[in-house]
Picture 1 (cartoon, rainbow, N blue to C red):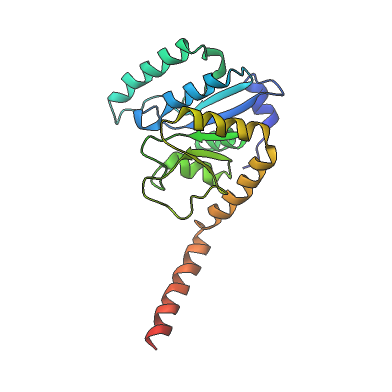
Picture 2: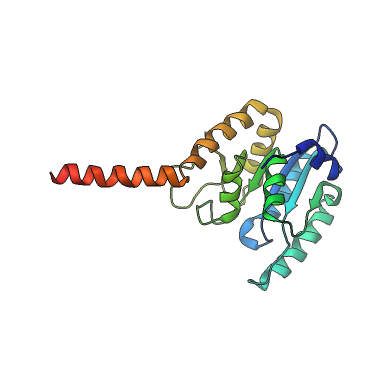
Length: 207
Protein backbone atom coordinates (compact mmCIF):
# COMPACT_ATOMS: atom_id res chain seq x y z
CA UNK A 1 0.00 0.00 0.00
CA UNK A 2 1.06 3.60 -0.62
CA UNK A 3 1.65 5.32 2.70
CA UNK A 4 1.80 9.05 3.37
CA UNK A 5 4.01 8.80 6.44
CA UNK A 6 4.23 12.57 6.86
CA UNK A 7 0.44 12.87 7.03
CA UNK A 8 0.19 9.99 9.51
CA UNK A 9 2.88 11.49 11.74
CA UNK A 10 1.02 14.79 11.67
CA UNK A 11 -2.22 13.00 12.55
CA UNK A 12 -0.45 11.38 15.51
CA UNK A 13 0.77 14.78 16.72
CA UNK A 14 4.45 13.97 16.24
CA UNK A 15 7.23 16.49 15.90
CA UNK A 16 9.75 16.31 13.04
CA UNK A 17 12.51 14.95 15.27
CA UNK A 18 10.39 12.41 17.17
CA UNK A 19 11.61 8.82 16.98
CA UNK A 20 8.58 6.56 16.61
CA UNK A 21 8.58 3.04 18.00
CA UNK A 22 5.66 0.75 17.22
CA UNK A 23 4.18 -2.25 18.99
CA UNK A 24 1.41 -4.25 17.34
CA UNK A 25 -1.04 -6.66 18.93
CA UNK A 26 -3.13 -7.20 22.03
CA UNK A 27 -1.64 -6.44 25.42
CA UNK A 28 -0.50 -9.70 26.96
CA UNK A 29 2.06 -10.57 29.63
CA UNK A 30 4.06 -12.61 27.12
CA UNK A 31 4.60 -9.51 24.95
CA UNK A 32 6.99 -7.86 27.42
CA UNK A 33 5.40 -4.43 27.17
CA UNK A 34 6.46 -3.58 30.73
CA UNK A 35 10.08 -4.25 29.73
CA UNK A 36 9.63 -1.94 26.75
CA UNK A 37 8.22 0.84 28.94
CA UNK A 38 11.12 0.56 31.38
CA UNK A 39 13.57 0.70 28.45
CA UNK A 40 11.95 3.85 27.05
CA UNK A 41 11.92 5.48 30.47
CA UNK A 42 15.62 4.70 30.96
CA UNK A 43 16.45 6.70 27.82
CA UNK A 44 15.04 9.86 29.41
CA UNK A 45 14.29 11.22 25.97
CA UNK A 46 10.81 12.72 25.38
CA UNK A 47 11.35 12.57 21.59
CA UNK A 48 11.07 8.78 21.75
CA UNK A 49 7.41 7.93 21.25
CA UNK A 50 5.64 4.55 21.37
CA UNK A 51 2.71 3.79 19.06
CA UNK A 52 0.52 0.96 20.37
CA UNK A 53 -1.26 -0.39 17.29
CA UNK A 54 -4.52 -2.32 17.61
CA UNK A 55 -7.03 -3.15 20.32
CA UNK A 56 -5.95 -3.44 23.92
CA UNK A 57 -6.93 -6.86 25.22
CA UNK A 58 -9.25 -8.88 23.00
CA UNK A 59 -11.40 -11.61 24.56
CA UNK A 60 -9.33 -14.79 24.21
CA UNK A 61 -7.30 -14.37 27.41
CA UNK A 62 -9.07 -12.89 30.47
CA UNK A 63 -5.70 -12.14 32.12
CA UNK A 64 -5.00 -9.55 29.41
CA UNK A 65 -7.27 -7.01 31.12
CA UNK A 66 -5.37 -7.32 34.39
CA UNK A 67 -2.03 -6.94 32.63
CA UNK A 68 -3.37 -3.94 30.69
CA UNK A 69 -4.19 -2.26 34.02
CA UNK A 70 -0.63 -2.98 35.13
CA UNK A 71 0.70 -1.40 31.94
CA UNK A 72 -1.46 1.70 32.46
CA UNK A 73 -0.20 2.09 36.03
CA UNK A 74 3.40 1.60 34.93
CA UNK A 75 3.09 4.24 32.21
CA UNK A 76 1.88 6.69 34.83
CA UNK A 77 4.58 5.77 37.35
CA UNK A 78 7.33 6.12 34.72
CA UNK A 79 5.98 9.43 33.44
CA UNK A 80 5.36 8.10 29.94
CA UNK A 81 1.72 9.06 29.46
CA UNK A 82 2.63 11.72 26.90
CA UNK A 83 5.03 9.43 25.03
CA UNK A 84 2.58 6.60 24.32
CA UNK A 85 -0.04 6.81 21.58
CA UNK A 86 -2.90 4.30 21.22
CA UNK A 87 -4.64 3.66 17.90
CA UNK A 88 -7.41 1.35 19.13
CA UNK A 89 -8.85 -1.18 16.67
CA UNK A 90 -7.82 -0.39 13.10
CA UNK A 91 -8.16 -2.07 9.70
CA UNK A 92 -5.46 -4.26 8.19
CA UNK A 93 -4.50 -1.48 5.79
CA UNK A 94 -4.19 0.96 8.68
CA UNK A 95 -2.00 -1.50 10.56
CA UNK A 96 0.29 -1.70 7.55
CA UNK A 97 0.40 2.08 7.22
CA UNK A 98 1.24 2.59 10.89
CA UNK A 99 3.96 -0.08 10.78
CA UNK A 100 5.52 1.52 7.71
CA UNK A 101 5.39 4.95 9.35
CA UNK A 102 7.20 3.80 12.49
CA UNK A 103 10.97 4.22 12.62
CA UNK A 104 11.31 0.87 14.38
CA UNK A 105 9.01 -1.95 15.46
CA UNK A 106 9.77 -3.30 18.94
CA UNK A 107 8.44 -6.73 20.01
CA UNK A 108 10.19 -7.88 23.20
CA UNK A 109 8.48 -11.26 23.64
CA UNK A 110 9.19 -12.97 26.96
CA UNK A 111 9.31 -16.37 25.25
CA UNK A 112 11.48 -15.22 22.35
CA UNK A 113 10.68 -14.44 18.74
CA UNK A 114 9.15 -17.09 16.50
CA UNK A 115 7.30 -17.44 13.21
CA UNK A 116 4.09 -18.14 15.15
CA UNK A 117 3.94 -14.51 16.31
CA UNK A 118 1.57 -12.77 13.91
CA UNK A 119 2.76 -9.32 15.03
CA UNK A 120 6.33 -10.20 14.07
CA UNK A 121 5.20 -11.61 10.73
CA UNK A 122 3.26 -8.37 10.08
CA UNK A 123 6.40 -6.32 10.72
CA UNK A 124 8.36 -8.56 8.34
CA UNK A 125 5.56 -8.21 5.78
CA UNK A 126 5.94 -4.41 5.90
CA UNK A 127 9.77 -4.51 5.72
CA UNK A 128 10.17 -2.80 9.09
CA UNK A 129 13.37 -2.39 11.08
CA UNK A 130 12.71 -4.75 13.98
CA UNK A 131 13.95 -5.16 17.53
CA UNK A 132 12.80 -8.39 19.14
CA UNK A 133 14.00 -11.09 21.52
CA UNK A 134 16.32 -13.97 20.76
CA UNK A 135 14.36 -17.13 19.87
CA UNK A 136 14.40 -19.86 22.52
CA UNK A 137 14.88 -22.42 19.75
CA UNK A 138 17.39 -21.05 17.20
CA UNK A 139 15.83 -19.90 13.93
CA UNK A 140 18.42 -19.64 11.12
CA UNK A 141 16.56 -16.78 9.43
CA UNK A 142 16.62 -14.59 12.56
CA UNK A 143 20.10 -13.08 12.48
CA UNK A 144 21.51 -9.76 13.65
CA UNK A 145 21.70 -8.44 10.11
CA UNK A 146 17.94 -9.00 9.70
CA UNK A 147 16.69 -7.78 13.11
CA UNK A 148 18.25 -6.66 16.38
CA UNK A 149 17.94 -9.43 18.97
CA UNK A 150 18.03 -8.86 22.73
CA UNK A 151 17.55 -11.09 25.75
CA UNK A 152 13.97 -11.30 27.08
CA UNK A 153 13.23 -8.92 29.98
CA UNK A 154 16.63 -7.23 29.59
CA UNK A 155 15.87 -3.52 29.91
CA UNK A 156 19.46 -2.39 29.33
CA UNK A 157 19.90 -4.39 26.12
CA UNK A 158 16.53 -3.24 24.81
CA UNK A 159 17.27 0.42 25.57
CA UNK A 160 20.67 0.11 23.87
CA UNK A 161 19.07 -1.43 20.77
CA UNK A 162 16.51 1.40 20.60
CA UNK A 163 19.27 4.00 20.94
CA UNK A 164 21.30 2.28 18.23
CA UNK A 165 18.50 2.48 15.69
CA UNK A 166 17.58 5.99 16.81
CA UNK A 167 21.00 7.43 16.07
CA UNK A 168 22.14 5.13 13.26
CA UNK A 169 19.70 5.54 10.36
CA UNK A 170 22.05 3.59 8.11
CA UNK A 171 21.59 0.60 10.43
CA UNK A 172 17.82 0.93 10.12
CA UNK A 173 18.14 1.05 6.33
CA UNK A 174 20.30 -2.09 6.31
CA UNK A 175 17.79 -3.97 8.48
CA UNK A 176 14.96 -2.94 6.16
CA UNK A 177 16.81 -4.22 3.12
CA UNK A 178 17.63 -7.53 4.78
CA UNK A 179 14.17 -8.10 6.21
CA UNK A 180 12.80 -7.49 2.71
CA UNK A 181 14.92 -10.40 1.50
CA UNK A 182 13.52 -12.52 4.35
CA UNK A 183 9.97 -11.48 3.41
CA UNK A 184 10.52 -12.70 -0.15
CA UNK A 185 11.06 -16.19 1.19
CA UNK A 186 7.37 -16.29 2.11
CA UNK A 187 6.13 -15.46 -1.39
CA UNK A 188 4.18 -18.32 -2.95
CA UNK A 189 6.44 -18.20 -6.00
CA UNK A 190 9.49 -18.72 -3.81
CA UNK A 191 7.81 -21.47 -1.76
CA UNK A 192 6.73 -23.27 -4.93
CA UNK A 193 10.17 -22.96 -6.49
CA UNK A 194 11.88 -24.26 -3.34
CA UNK A 195 9.45 -27.19 -3.15
CA UNK A 196 10.06 -28.16 -6.77
CA UNK A 197 13.81 -27.87 -6.24
CA UNK A 198 13.56 -30.09 -3.15
CA UNK A 199 11.76 -32.88 -4.98
CA UNK A 200 14.09 -32.59 -7.98
CA UNK A 201 17.03 -33.06 -5.65
CA UNK A 202 15.42 -36.14 -4.07
CA UNK A 203 14.69 -37.65 -7.49
CA UNK A 204 18.23 -36.99 -8.69
CA UNK A 205 19.67 -38.70 -5.63
CA UNK A 206 17.42 -41.73 -6.14
CA UNK A 207 18.38 -41.92 -9.81
